[in-house]
Length: 197
Image (cartoon, rainbow, N blue to C red; front, side, top):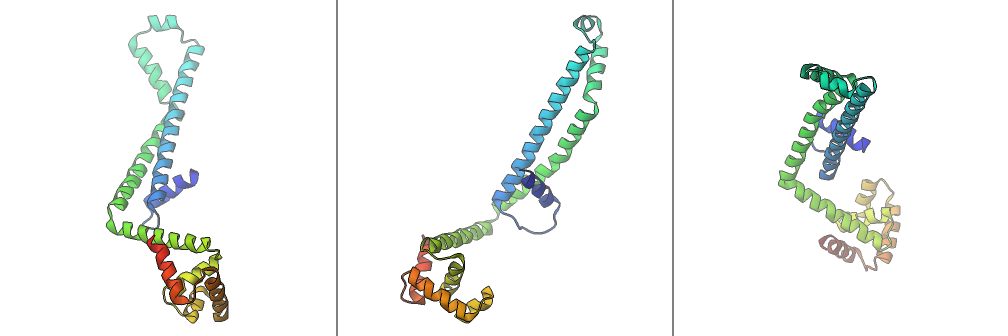
């Protein structure tokens, strides 16, 4: 929760473009709301404890009957303006624009249509990855399989993943065995089938 809160505050003051997901924004808004609720609860508890201390120190019920309204209001305001409650009120006031900005970012993020396409592409990538992993491929073999299905040669895959061409060939042999495919075309078809499901 602390990480979400501080990341949210950092996002509010960052000048960069989007580098976060909708879920990260939601978690940040939730964390800021939790901090606000905790601050309000702390404020109420502090206020009630100060009132109880006033009664314990001699602010008795008989004094309440005899005291004028102005004296009572002044004593309650004195308790409210004590350092703890003032700090909490300032904290809540400082958090309001942060929460407002995060909520606005979340709303604008949800209104942009190209984000749904990016999220759909990310979901397709995850489906392909988990489908390949379900076939028994390792992480590296899954990467090689996706790139090979995209039409890249062994040399291009090696350059992309910073591995030797011979290593790519070895991975391709294992991939074709595990995926039970006769060749690259069959593998490409199988990967396309995973992304469309």
